Amino acid sequence: MFHFKNSNGSINSIKTKNKKSKNSFRIIIIGFMAIILLGALLLMLPISSRGRCFTSFSDTLFTAVSATCVTGLVVRDTATYWSLFGQFVILIMIQIGGMGVITIGLAVIRASGKKIGLWQRSTMQESISAPQVGGIVRLTGFILKITAIIELIGASLLFPVFCAEFGFLKGLWYAVFHSISAFCNAGFDLMGVKSKFSSLCSYSGNIYINAIIMLLIIIGGIGFITWRDVGTHKFRLGKYTLQSKVALLTSLLLILLPAVYFFFWEYGDLSIRERTVSSLFQSVTARTAGFNTQDLSLMDESGTSVMIILMLIGGSPGSTAGGLKTTTFAVLFLSAITVFGRRNDVQCFKRRISDEAVRNAGAILFMYLALFLTGGVMISRIEDLPLLTCLFETGSAIGTVGLTLGITSSLSLFSRIILMILMFFGRVGGLTLIYAAIGPSENNNSRLPLEKITVG
Image (cartoon, rainbow, N blue to C red; front, side, top):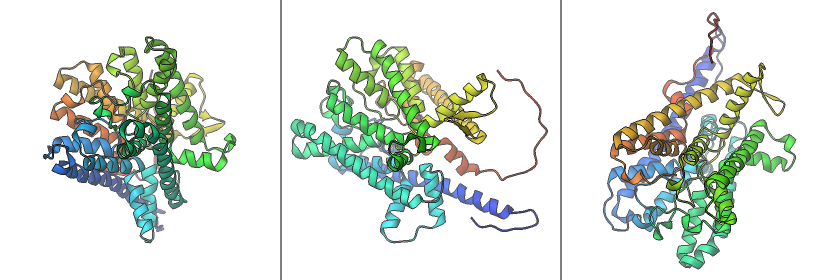
């Protein structure tokens, strides 16, 4: 930021900061678009499909958007339609989308030995929702390191099972693919070799596979900033930042409480062991992972509605997950408690939450609900399908989840376009898109007269 004093104060400083922020948001959007377009073009090539034929741009674009936005909705079965090259392209898009385009770009710049300037650091801050620019390069290194370690461990743990089932080379590829897909909360799988679009249903009773995939999903969805906090302070919980405390507690509750619901009301026909594993897995995966071990179309409307709520909430800020975020949900909940208790400030863990955070949370919720409902109603009218089924699809798209009740591949082009817009919005972020278009407003000391309005 450059500071220029004039008769009105540091106005030029404010304009420079706003311009840089606006440009940062635009770079993030352009970066995602570039990866999506490149991926779509590569997937069109005959070498990308098993049948060695050209794939329509509409199908490859949808796949590229879903992979880069780490969603998992597909119109072509990943295992049976795409060749090894096509699967590799999809995996690269998942990796870039999960870590963030800007993170990858800055890692390349750093590896080449070039200097990373203030503008690049500012862009990186916006990309990963970091609290400050200071230390952003070290944070980038931490993200790259922790991603490589966790994905390698995940692949190593999955390899024995897949090797025994598919052979050494294929088992190795399956282990790497599913480890990256799970950690990045993408939901893409290669189990279509057993049954198309079956996800992990064949492993519903395998506690080992379920546990590894769930851990990878949770670790990826907690957020890199929170994990750095955990690594720094270990078990000294009092030293954690407020964001880390809120993210960890909210994530824990959003795993356990829905799992209890699923256990008692959704999987009563299963054994206690399989019911427990399936309940926990569906509770974890619904918040942006996209895998499933049970047929979701068999759930009743109440269970489907619970899944939709979880998909909309998603993971934590600065993570590989999407959704409106656990911290947003927590701030909205705490704000409601503040109103009920007639207190002046929103509080949590003996800290006061800023009014700006509360306003942002309200705006994000409004945007997500408006787009989610509008998209669902439009698809329902276009396809003549039940509204709840379509809302499940749009909730999965905007939450970058990837779960479906089985309608994705049969949707018309217009409905797919709606889903692609929602997936892009969900991964890049609504505020990022708005700020890129209009930029932050300038500070203005003048205020309009106050007048009360009754709400509620």
